Image 1 (cartoon, rainbow, N blue to C red):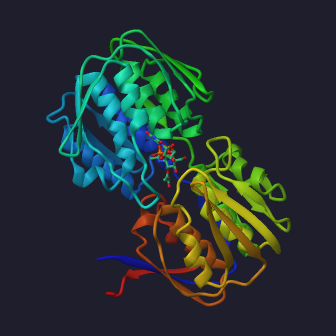
Image 2: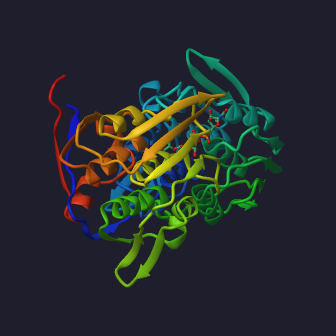
Length: 421
Ligand code: EPU
């Protein structure tokens, strides 16, 4: 049965929140276990429904899995199947990164095409063309990508710095024969973390974190123990919660660089590194004009949360979503809470004009995707009255125990079964 959150706004927030390991690093690093027959041990693994899902898919393929607290151990000694099913893959596009490592080590991979999602069409041409350049034979049958062949090094140009595209190709190249050079790669810190883990497993990689990654293939990779980096998206989300509620929430188990996107987009925000953890403080009084872009630009995964912050800044702010064509579904929901936001569609990008400084009021609203959902929680925390957010399963994909973490700081969020529509 679906669940909902009921948030009583206007509470004074004070306390400490421990940030989890980064979802978008852990998911891909778990898939890297397919590259070796030895144990890969991941510390600081986040306890998220998306992680359970990737483990379920890996388990069906024959990977041994053990979770103890935040430590996830995986061992792909042999596989009993090379087929990742539609029912599971469609629930999480990130699972498409199984393709590169599975093909590279076992010479065959069958994975359902992930299809579109709430954020838009989301093609996978970058993944498939890159693997073809490395010698893979790829066919699409009954909605499944069937990839076979022994991979060799290649020079690959990505037409867009796709995050999972880069990750799939880097993992595939680690066991390919010879050198692979990938140009226009994504530079996200989670990709750097994946490459660090691959290097600990014996891979030969240079250039990660820049726009050209060079991989010299090796015959085999070994097991390793790796600590997942902190989640910068979770970090900034709670930092915004603190700023908007004028609270005293100290963030631990995170690092100073995790706040970079926040301080770059909102230069008035100050981050204090104290004995109790990091404290993000406003006030933020200057309107902003922001556009999402690949790292190190403004993260699309923080666009919704930053828009909520902009609703509380007097004056007119502009936020343009340039990565995904359909990632402003939080706007009508925020408007139901009293925000004044208008969206204009232009050339595949959506530009929101936010007339800020208006008070927000509680209302029943619906979560539509992971980051949109959390933006509604942020709005609910500083709204007057009660906000009910339905379909919060989106939220549980990427925020571990969000209600418990905030309630420990004095928030009033109740999780309950959703009333039937
Ligand atoms: N694109 C192509 N062809 C491809 C792949 C992508 O044209 O083959 C286009 C997409 O249509 C999109 C753009 O490139 O317009 C960016 O997509 P990208 O491939 O970089 O996104 P992704 O790898 O599918 C990851 C994160 C997303 C995050 C984006 C952008 C994971 C599991 N997912 O998706 O995270 O929004 O990068 O930074 O790492 C989230 O955590 O909430 C989330 C959606």
